[in-house]
Image (cartoon, rainbow over all chains, first blue to last red; front, side, top):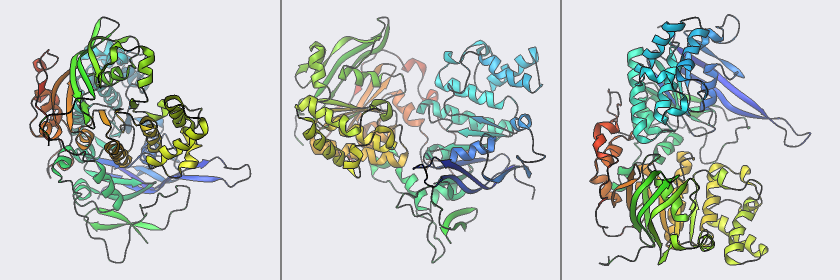
Amino acid sequence: MSAPLLEIRDLSVHFTLPRQTPFGPKRILRAVQGVNLTLNEGECLSIVGESGCGKSTTALTVMGLQEPTSGQVLYRGKPLAGPGAPGRKERARIAQMVFQDPYASLNPRQTIGSTLAAQLALHGIARGSEARDRVADMLTRVGLQPDHAGRFPHEFSGGQRQRIGIARALMLDPQILVLDEPVSALDVSIQAQIINLLMDLQESMGLSYIMISHDLSVVEHVSDRVAVMYFGRVVEEGGWQSVFQRPTHPYTRRLIGSVPDAEAILTGARRVPDPAPIPEGRRFSPDISARPDPSDMPEPSSLTEIGPGHRVRLAD
Amino acid sequence: MSDHLPDPILSVRDLRICAARQHQILHGVSFDILPGETYGLVGESGSGKSVTGLAVLGLLKRPLAVNGGALYFKDRELLKLSARERRRLRGDRMAMVFQEPMTALNPLATIGRQIAEMFVIHRGMGWTQARAKAVEALENVRVPAPEERARAYPHQLSGGMRQRVMIAMALACRPDLLIADEPTTALDVTVQAGVLELIADLCRAEGTAVLLVSHDLGVIANMCQRVGVMDRGRLVEEQDTRALFENPLHPYTRGLLAARPRLGSRIAGQRGRLTELDQVVTASDRGRDAPTLVTPRGPREEVTA
């Protein structure tokens, strides 16, 4: 079998916290601890969890915006860091990012056209009228008008700005898009349009997505595979069906149980699907009844397969 | 259930709000909130749901101004009161919980002091007594170690805790009406559930009426007995919560309900494409001046959260 498109191998990211007292010990925040993930071609992998669980840090490492403390990110089997690794320009053509707040990530003083064309010039792909054609083509693809290129970010609505954010990410024809909460700043009505657009683009351009989200209903609709993170570690991982129809780790179950779903609440039919059985004599790790301290060393645990491609973290 | 409904605690009549005297933001919105009822306002951003809440409290900032209609709170006409009288009502008889607790709290004062201020201003208590009441208020909103927390500053608390502090402040004087504007939008789902339950429990215990402004239909279904749907500055539909979800009357409501990604609705082996709002509601159905579609109130149900 060929190497997966992207492989995150034993990734850890630690941050040093300031000392609490002048001579006290240095404290280490373990934001990401030994995360292993793979992204196959044409797939959408979602990372879910609440704020502070390390999902965005993991994504930033993929983008090369955060140095890992240990571990590797491999693209088609080759490491993205260290000797012989691709430079920043090459890397930009491998993976691009779509941010949560498109307004904060667009230059307010540049027209959309020049924002989009700048990367083409920087990478020596196209200039002048050819660049303009490419920009016009990309704007049409994301559902905007070619003449929008002459406008500034403030002239667009939130949904249109997110379309521009997607267009910007796609200009260099990357293989991977990292979507960081792509729809959480948008209204429900516009969310649907952007989600559909992302799914259409994935099909027509053969893209692979890593989506970071805390909105489980969106994740269920878009993902092929889902990884649930809790305090820096993956606690459950599997195909969308296994995770949503047999949620097994107590934390996954709590997440699914907290999604407010109108019909389920009104009919009283609210129910989290039954968990898959775990091997006898094993218990879940971490114990979610108490809030773990991310500066403590976690107890030894490992991801154990409980179904085809469906793994949960159990204590060793 | 009694045949006649009690007098509303808040009655909004044909409320109109404009920006800079030229742009109409709210085109005549009318609804009633009964004592002890939780009334939800849903809509997209820009539909006018938040400005409605702010107008009731009298917190509209220039260039926004009320340019028509009336607001009756119990038997008083709010728009005819002086600024001083409205200030006296605000925080005492009607209070607000904002979306972003970090910007709503004073970063330079301890939270104990900020809650105590409510008792000093509205109840004329001394600071010592007010501080003791503040600790009690924190205990009521289930903040662990309230004594200690009262001495903390807002930045030392987590988002969920800050929102609890906001609720403690808002409910300190046992108001008749609580306006909650997207109270849980900034919180994680697991924390959101706890905060909603807290608001529901406390308001039910005190018989406080709630105006809940939210774009999240799940939150609305969880909390409200009655819901108004707003679109482009108009209240297009008002129904009991269950009826709204079972039998939406306005095409816009149908569109809004259809566009939600819903947990458990993706079919195996298929891609989870969503219905877009525009596929359900046509442009001609939106932004028109038409009477609000209202169904009468059904038997009053308990808050479910």
